[in-house]
Length: 386
Image: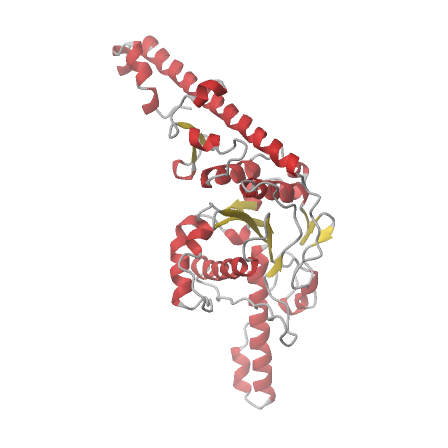
């Protein structure tokens, strides 16, 4: 089927499912209407953004990360949240403090809990979160979420040990039994107290927010994602202590310790057309995954270490990542990709039809052998054959 025949289909006609052969509940159904979203001057809908991000992450053969030994398995290291994740998370947001122990946070987590079922987000290196608010797209990338829990729990244990030491110094010797035992890291052989001095050398969790029109509130997005990670840990690691992240020091306030989850708002290429925010979001993910290097615990993007102790990475200039012409070419590339995947779907259906016809014609003991060929062909959609 060429593109002229594709245009004659009804808007809701399914073209293909992505990924093919995967879990039925995890597939994305791309229709002809979604295909038209890649036309010039057309905004991307949720299906297009979900499909684009999933394809960019899953296409390890074309990604430069395929040559990085640290990213030998993209499915293991990167997770893409669906486009309605953040919409459900911050639905009904009111101007009140967000606390992981409050009813507001529990209601928010209940709305998105099913979206992370079967996925250990703390075992990933990167979490890609598309944000769609007020008909505009942006991208939030959570880096090293597992280090966030380690850092917060380590600070909690240090606080307990200091409090116990003060009680022991005051003459209450029974307080020594309240101290938590030192944890030995099986990878390094060091106790937690030995590794505390090296904390600055470890990876730092951060949220990198990229907005093609500077329209979304990055601090609000970081607040909701931080609350989600706290609630997710409590749900998935119920046998371990909960943690609460150290928040940022308010601007103009007294100096304090840096936040556990740092917020990065680098300068990124801005959209030239009002309908390009969705494509810019896809391009941000593609460029980031192509340029990010995880050497050990460090995260380096464009040669810069994005795990220092600053509060905000405003000095990171990524504006030369791509141009408006690259976005226009990306539209054409995705249009061609949709047509290619549609053609692959037709080939799979054709092979399944041939297989069913051969079974019906050659296997005299099969029930299919009693049916005419024309009926066999009509039954093809009901057979789950690769």
